[in-house]
Every structure is written in structure tokens, then in C-alpha cells.
Image (cartoon, rainbow, N blue to C red; front, side):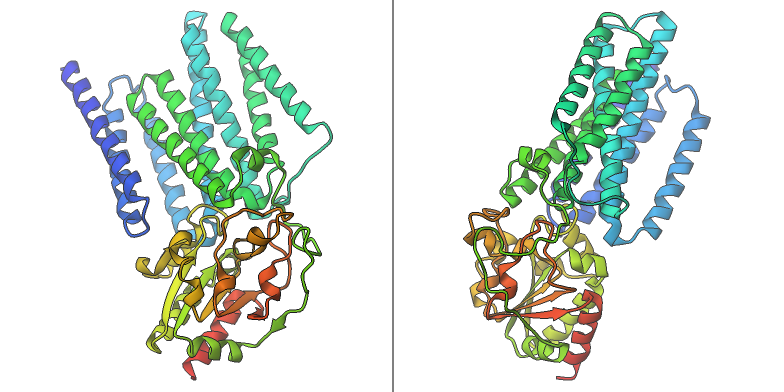
Length: 466
């Protein structure tokens, strides 16, 4: 009977793994993302049920308590957390995953050591990996959450001898690991756990807010790797497969984000770039004319209403103002007037990968209206009006023109090639890169100052009167 049960559990794991892979595939497109999420959720349900049927499970009562508590927290979070706070939510999820993996590694090491008096070499090695990756993921994710939430500064934080100190921590961890492999010692193991937690915080500390999309996706990958390590500890094939999938997809997404910024991952992690500074002056080494022209909502509505084609470029400012519903209403009004409206989405717009897609989907914007950077850039020279809502660095022509600029070489949306550009912004503050945006001072660019939500609402009212 046990043989049949074990075979059934492994088959269930195989089905769950297939659903995970199908889900990941469908998550690659906004049009199929919801279906992909559903398939992956079904796969996880199958995996959980199969695991609970395993006869090595000793205490179902505590598992039930944990499932009920987790379900309640998840349901409340789904209702209460706004879409604009999804980056912070993802950061917390990553941290919880890392914490779970680290706790399992610590628990299993401690159980085997107290039961047998020693721990096999392979189990010790996997436990060390589990606490290293899990600990770094936990504290790194918590600090990323604090930066995104504004609880701590979003600017890169550095201190004297930071890199030597980090190297010393890493050397201490490696030395302790070697000692632990030779002689299992609970005190040394707990010390390694503490070092991993400290290292996670120091890992994220010098990374600026502008690089948070990369950090979030990388920490997501770490949480998967930590889960995979725990799978080896528990001899659970499902955890190994799921952890490998999350780890690999997170690394691929991280690479996509780095490519979108035209910066290597090492520069993101160690370059102390992307704080919320407010540099004054040229975008880099080129002086630009600081004259700009501002308009009111009535003029902006006339420009939009009498255009043949409009491309809306959303950014973090739209997310902060929660203006996505107003943007969708504005687009609907323009479409009723015969205007062709599209949305241009930059891969790193916002605070996490796909941030703009999530917000616009919440506002029921049709997926076929969303265009990736590579697809929309070929059309900008035929666009009558480009409406930029809270985006900054991702539309800065300095990325193409000024080789002294910190963002030089980063692929951008070619808004400056449109016939006219309207930029909705609270002020002339710089973006995360801390450099002036050449677009704001071009002759064909006009500025609309104010909260994105208020300005968009005014534009909707004015467009209705045309």
C-alpha cells in the first residue's frame, strides 16, 4: 500500500511541475498572465495535498493552524494592499520564502544533530546553503521593502571600508562553513545564520531605489534557490523542481531588467547608483537650455482631443498618484472622438517588473493596447501627441545623446521623436538617476504640473467639453 501511495505522490508532483511550467509560460504575456497564475496555483494545490498524504507527516494539527493563519493573512492582504504597493508586497513574499527555507535548514540540522550526535557531510553542506541563501533573502527583502515603502532612504547607503567589511563577513562565513563540515557545532551553525542575516541587509543597503526592479527579481530568484536547497534537505522532489523553476525564472527576469537598463548586474549591485537625489545641472557632460513651457489642462485637452494618434507613457508617478483609472477613462474619451490611443510600456518603469502592466490591468485597460518598448519605438515619429504620466529616466534622450550621463546607453522610449509631447509631473525634480531630463526642455514638449490623478481628471473633464 505504501508503494502505491508513494507512486501516487510522485505522479502528483509530476503533474504539479507540469502545471508550474505551463503557468510560467503563460505569465510571459499580459493577455495570458491570469490563466498562467491560475494554472500555477492549481499545481501548488496538488503539490500541497500530495505532500500532506505523505506518511512521514507527524502533526497535521499544527499544519492546519499554519494553513488557516496563512490563508487569512493572504486574503486580508489581497483585499487591503493597493496595486501601487505590489512591489512592497512582492518584497515581503520573497522575504517570507527565504525565512521559511532558513528555518527548515536550521530545524533539520538541529534535529539530526540532537538525535544522532552528528550530521552527515552532504546534509551539513545543504543546510549551510539553506541558511546562507534563505538568510540573505530574508533581510535583503525586508530592507528592499523598507526602501520601497519609504521607511528608510531610497538612496544608496555606503560607509567607509564597506567592501572590505563585506569581504571579511564572507570570509568568516566560508571559514565557519569549513569548520562546520569537519565538526558539527550548533554554536558555529547559529553564528553562520546570524552572518547570513547581516550580509543580506548589507547586500541591499548600497542599492538605490531606481534599481529596485532588479533587486526584487534577484531576491525572488534567491527565494527559489533557497527552497530548492530545502528540497534536498527534506528529500522532496517537488521543492527541488519548484525552487529550480523560481530560481531560473528570477535570474532570467533579472537579466532582462539589466538589459533594459543597459547595465551589468555587477554595476547594479555594487555601483551605488539610482538614489533619489536631486541633481541640478546638465544631464551629464552636456549643458542644456533650461527653458521649458508649461500649459494648463484646457490646452492639454485640446492637443489630445484634436490629435489623430496618442501614445500614453505611464511611469511611477502614475502609480504613486493611483491615476490608472483616470488614465483609462481619458483614453476611452479620446477613442470616442476617433483618436487612436496606445500605451508604451518600458521594462523598468515603476518599482518592479511589470508594474505598469499590473496597474493598467487593474483599470481594465485592454491588453492589446499595451506595447513593449521595441514595438512602439518604431511608431513614435508618426505619433501626434505622446502623453508622459510620471515617467522620467525611461524617456530621457540623454541616454542616447550624452555619453557622460549616468544613464547613457540605457534603451529608452523615443518620446522625443513624437510631433508633440505633454509631460505630467509634480515638479522639475530629477528621476532616480538624479539627472535632468532633456525631453522637458525641448521646443515641442509642454509641462503639466500637478498630481497625476488631479491633472488626468481635469483632462477628462476638458476633453468631454470639446
